Length: 279
Image 1 (cartoon, rainbow, N blue to C red):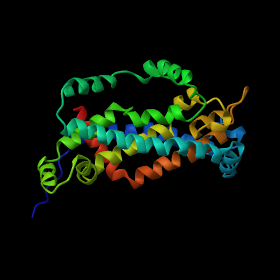
Image 2 (tube, rainbow, N blue to C red):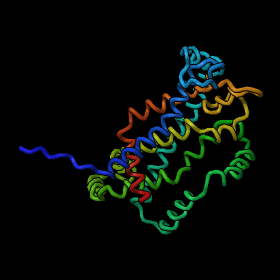
Image 3 (cartoon, rainbow, N blue to C red):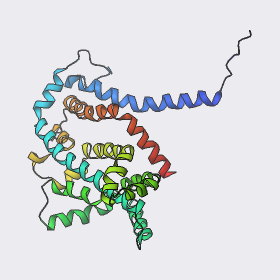
Image 4 (cartoon, rainbow, N blue to C red):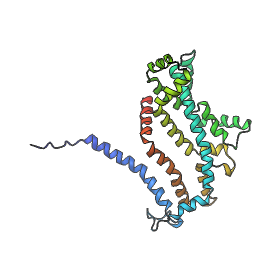
């Protein structure tokens, strides 16, 4: 039997080369960060990409050079309530837009979508002045409170689009069994919307964990710094401790990487949902 020779596909080869090039663009800075975190200060700007002797002690020095665990606790104080508030308000707002009919619903939804077109820098100064007038600056509240009022319109839009695809027959069956609106929301809509809600949780985690601008604007005391803001303490007036800065950066990246590998199924599904929504 004659073997069928695989046909040369130029488009697949080009796609493969583009993917390899994109991977290299992403991986080279990451590898440089890892190699720098293992170098001595004298080797940081040397010609060798990898250190001659790997300095694993840089990681321990990076943790002790700054109040690392204090900053970690501050980050979690912000992160946990923000995730809870974002998921709850996104779900309940999306449920209202997906299942309720009321006057002005379309206009209100268009206003919600319009807020997605405003860069955060546009509302930064008015929001800061508002929190300053009520005396909430230099506290975690300005970073937490907006999450309980539907701060991210895209999350609401994402979950709402998913909920619209859930058959209304489930609601009607629950009504027949005596369930009210709240029971339908908590016992039917929330469990069925697990994929977009987990995706919203991951997006929120990434945003808060890596947020530098928010803590920089609202937090003035070093004791209240988050991990992202604490990295700036490695930068002195005349020099930067690049090896320990990169070591601390790797340590801060690890939780996000671990979370991605644990929940990558929902993350990829959330990306596909968001791509379909944008399309």
